[in-house]
Length: 123
Image (cartoon, rainbow, N blue to C red; front, side, top):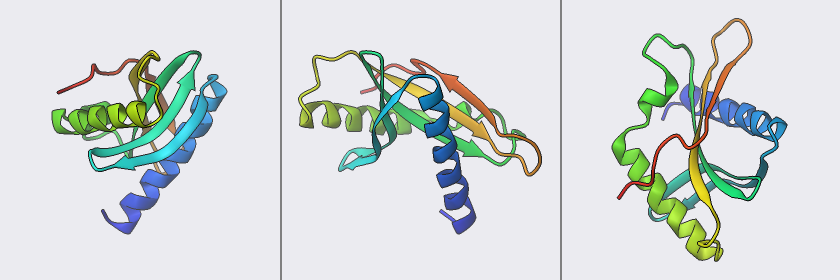
């Protein structure tokens, strides 16, 4: 990942955290990593644990941010989520995968989209 892409991603994750907090989410963990993969944000939305994938693009010319989350990424996020639930003994809780897509154009305000229950767990 290039320095510019890394900075874009970090900026997007900061925007996503603020966005989620304003919608009542409580942040539990950031950049949770395990041997199976990484989860950008783990949050609590009411009684439900939300594993949040964040994608930040500098423009929408290549399609919406959600289109960049492929099957393999969903599989790794699912495995990491199960690891987190097992590690913290939370398997009995309701949980889901949410998605925050951000377009950070050079001019104007960021465009932020939240998709709750964006995809089902994948094997």
